[in-house]
View (cartoon, helix red, strand yellow):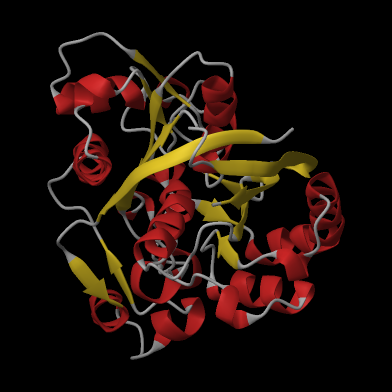
Amino acid sequence: MIRKLNILGSGVFLPPHKVSSSELDQQHGFPDGTVASKTGVHYRHYAQEESASELAAKAIQQALHKAQLQLTDIDCIIAASGTMEQAIPCNAANILAQLDCDTPITAFDINATCLSALVAMDLAASMLHTGQHKHIIIVSSDIASPGLNWQQPETAGLFGDGAAAIILGQAHAEQHSKILAAQFKTYNHTQDLCQIRGGGSLHHPSKIQGDYTPYGFFEMQGKKLFKATSKVIDSFCVELFKQANLTLEDIDWIVPHQASGLALEHLINKLAIDRKKIIHLLKDRGNQIAVSLPSGLHELLHSQQARTGDKILLIGTSAGLSLGGVILQL
């Protein structure tokens, strides 16, 4: 189903603390070049005193400024992060508190880990299409750095912190963008390949004897995840393009989830993608979980390279294993 919308503004906020891979090598006693060679990431930003909701609020303020809107113009906020600031309340409530929003508005979370913002965009497009809302903020804010296990540098070195926000509005007759196709699939029996075991009822601290710290670490079985993704990515893309009656050659820009250097190379080679079409942020920001996709779209829009009518493929994977894709026409 084609749904019209307007992209009114976007914003990105990175914590000021920028960390090089060489610094991480020194900090953790690795030979120089270890983290960069294993991850493809040279720099990333780590939050220090900032909370995820504070990062989100700063990205929202940038997006509001770009859109020439006030917070009072917004009637819905969708917090689309892959991590929680705390178990309860939802991230959206904490973000509203940071914004000092006095007017009650619709605010809720979507968590599809790295695909959260893409799922939120799909939902927001339908909400705008029905006239239910006029201006919707989608904001992703993830702080991965406290949950990294440096006994696995090839995984820990991938991640960076940050926030990104996009403001969507109802389409106007004279100017609008379109979602031409959207697809999300979760594949069974792969849910434990990428996980943080703690934070919920299954491994509640009251049930665990001894050190609880490992339950707060991110865990990934990279080779198995890579193999599982390889089996399904081709058929997933065929179905997505069929929805839009398009082929890969019709796509002007590709904004992929910045999962890892290996994952990006695999996507490029598997689908025979023209590298000039790819938005690549991994080297200087790392994998920012749910922030990755809206950050990539923000950078493309602000680069002024994309033109009205251009078709953009936003595509990625997330824990689950899930795949998601949206084809957006500007």
